[in-house]
Length: 416
Image (cartoon, rainbow, N blue to C red):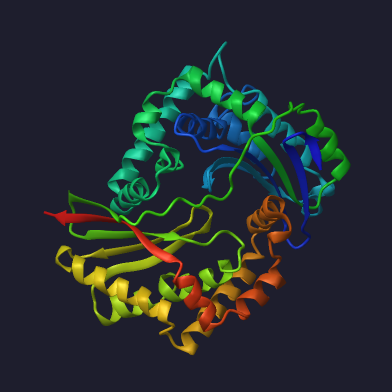
């Protein structure tokens, strides 16, 4: 239901879980100018507020509510950036006297959003500096992770859109520019301009929830959001090579997908990815790693929302060209339909098994609801999705594979 233009409330009945879950998602266009501030907001809201002004009091209140859990996270989908505030708590029928924690936790949520720990025009300076330092340390640690660094460099090569070159958690130079005042403004922008979705999963008093959330008094907003993005393809393959102190070298390849979310080739593409590099029986794993012994680790990852298929491999530096050739051969085999019926059926069974298992995760039900809201009738429910996967043929996989084209190559040569 609509709480305000651009602010929606979604109830997801779920009896099989012992917990209820409240998730608030703030969504705005992905922008290099705002991403660092938004990530800092996420970290600060997870620490303290005016009602519970220290981390100890903040977490003590959650402990008093029978160990309720409050967390925040950031994500990116297509050309949008999202911040989630999530609360998980025990259902009333599992508590003494049927105690319902929903209202006190909605009050806690209100305090976190509308009563942040602040001074006159910015976040509390001490709290801000602690969280800024923590984020900078996290970013430094990520950069020391060579695969993370390779991912960032590959994205910079693959995407022409400057905003999509930035990781979802920002970059050090962007975080360093932020102040307690600019980050507080980022929170106000989220409250007044972001699309906001409230998800209530479990068993709750709907009338009580609606009444309390209407008291949050959100204003009108209508952000322009692109949940899917297909970058333009270039005939010129972009390449970058670096040297770093490391035992292992890293090869990453970015492939452009001429396939969009939920079009006729989407499900065949998912099957292709599983068969190509996502599973342990895939061609990349069995042929490149197991048979040829060229890679310590290898696989493929699909991001349909940004039109990207990534292949990653940890290798010895002298095996770069040979690994490249063998990866190209595996893709060519996929395009020609050179794979066994047994591997195809195994891939479909594993995809379906994974999808069925995901129904036991409350968060996954929320994501399915969100996709249904965004994509409407184009979004398949689980039985429809399973049926679509089962119907994928060799020809379907081959057709999808032919729409996968190499666009960027990043190589980190490990030297000691």
